[in-house]
Length: 276
Image 1 (cartoon, helix red, strand yellow):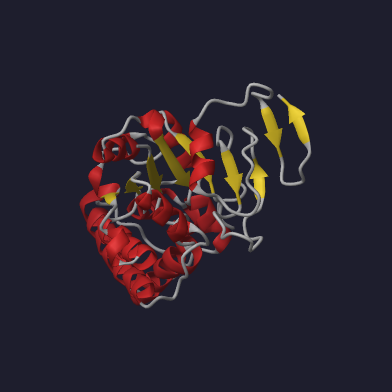
Image 2 (cartoon, rainbow, N blue to C red):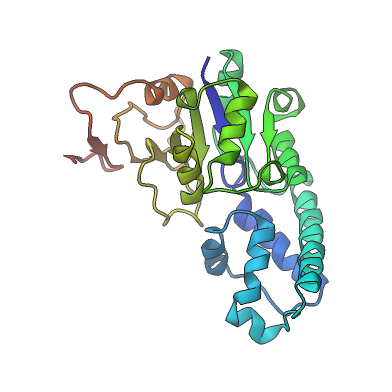
């Protein structure tokens, strides 16, 4: 059986702005650090995989250094980042467990379809394990959540765009990478999935929408629900007949061979077509 592998943040829930960004900014208030990330600044930081890594990057950020004295000692800086990240994770968990961020449309439905069909299920994320499990439990519910193998940023040495977390996920579900479909929301995630030899579809968020998704087999605004009109196809190079939602049959077609009549078809949301 094939496998369905989800990224976590931005895919299961649009956590980046209402969850992680809010948690980072509240954390700095708690520590009385005169710094806040705007949505635009955080969108840039999303090109760095992992919350701890985004914090480390501030060491070389001129704007941040202008308002806060970065410790000269690497040991002190490491302790500082660890304390920040620990408090930020606590705030994020409070937000998720409080149900303040809704799951993205179609995620649980598609996961249920895959589970009922016997597909392997996994989560492959760059985030902290505790945060990932909280999101999976919230989105999927306890019973379905237990069906997932969960790989986090703590499971790997190299985070996305390195393929390691997806390679581990394939081994966890006992499947070849060529039989795995990944749902991602960022260019880093897409690069990681492709480097692992997997088929990838993208459901972008407001913060990641401007990133480069070249190589994705489908880009759709969200996985959607039947007959709601939620899902809007943005890029569809394989011409899979998606209307307003993605189902298990569509995933099977993404894994299958390209249509013989139009192997390089590019379909936009407006329905226009051109050959590459």
